[in-house]
Image 1: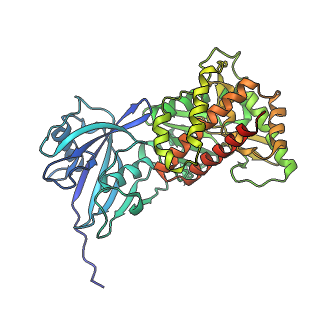
Image 2: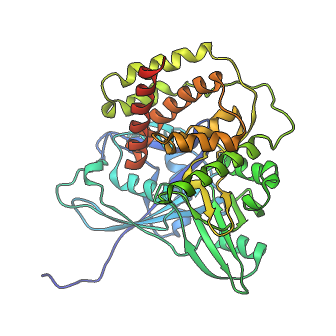
Image 3: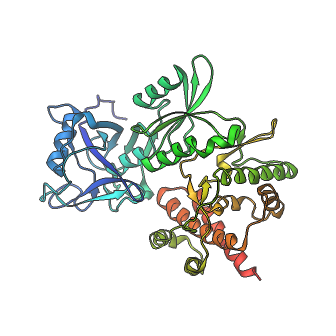
Length: 456
């Protein structure tokens, strides 16, 4: 084994210019061209740090490559990546998030770049420089540090089959978020990272120095932040102890501090059949409380927009069974004949992972309102319906708690919404390495097709 030598790594500054798009946050990328390293691959505007600070390097490289003028005060550190290419020495990449600038981005160095475009963070282009993709993946996951050591023979372009990224989690949120939380609840003695192992999930449990427990959450985009804050300030208050209370919100940080609720997650919980029926009866009651939290239903659009169907199908198609695509398209085409349903407050992600059960008190809690918006009530049964499949007793318990059965119109829209959710889940899970989402989508399609085949 060679003796260890002192590391001497160059430092790179990477720009993550981020804006809110119609489908969520978007990042500015450019495509390398000509007689340059990694020609033909997409990457973020970046460059070497010279005789300057890393922030000054970021500002300089941004102007030279994109024409954008960035104030150093608007530069926020996002993530650091310790990278080693297939050939050559390791280096340190500091990725900065920038959300304010002057000017319009354009190709400033045509001898090195032939295209510059905005891409949704959930729809990154290929081929992309693996180093840059590692930084973006770490950023989306909310990590502070990533290690990306490629092996000799690895491609320069990102390849999921040889993804070398290793995320190093942080125990506490970054300084601004931590300061915001402590201004709201006092000094915090201990932080516990309780984020899901999914991109852009950033949630911490905060334990106060003088007692008390809260949750601190940073939303991945402004839309999710607005939805959750609006719900927590509005209709959620009517649920009483069944939901957390908003303690503080910061729109700039896209952060909230909320109270903790009791119980344990129903995600993966194994309960005796009688207790399951009790829980699902309470789920139905809670759904009714959510949908009745406004004075009266308002006229609405009725069904989920289907404009993204083609894009989702393109990604999901390799995983679909014979006849799945035909069934999905037939279901979506039938949506034109469905009547509109009134809009009511909906949770938007009403499923077992967002429900908590306290067996001692018999209290059911609901959390996570970032997908909350007005829509047809049936929207909240889409993901929940997977939980009662094959268990008519649980379906009966939910409907009994809800106070009424679904109408024929609602059942038709449930099929449509479930099919759309399935194909989008398969597409997203495939693109982001989430096998649970893929499996849930495939399982849902099998169920929907079976129900369609056996329907009278």
